[in-house]
Image 1 (cartoon, helix red, strand yellow):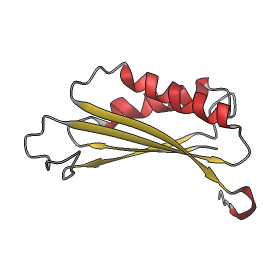
Image 2 (cartoon, helix red, strand yellow; image 1 turned 30 degrees about the vertical axis):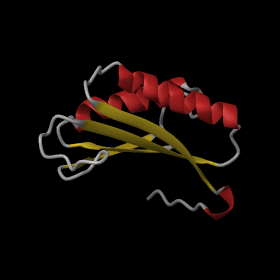
Image 3 (cartoon, rainbow, N blue to C red; image 1 turned 45 degrees about the horizontal axis):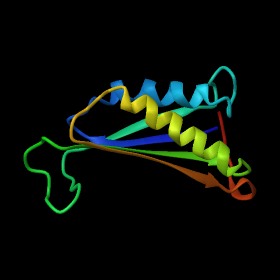
Image 4 (cartoon, rainbow, N blue to C red; image 1 turned 180 degrees about the vertical axis):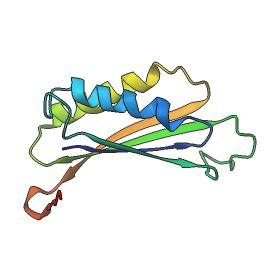
Length: 116
């Protein structure tokens, strides 16, 4: 079920990031074994600010992943998931890159879904 939303600087290729996030989520064993419930999407940003100075040189990079999952998982499971995704992104070894991952609970009682 996770909705994995990757936000990143446009200097990084979305197609490089998406399989890393998907595979790390799958390897967490918190979701369907075949990965059929894992959804990954990416949004790149041309204009952004990562600290005190606005990005003008295109020499700084950022990646932020939000993993939206149904509530009910333990803090330890969520920490393991975020660390696993972060470790997979670290394999890119991008210099001057701020990389972050957060896990956000989706309240089961109010979540609805339609697949047609």
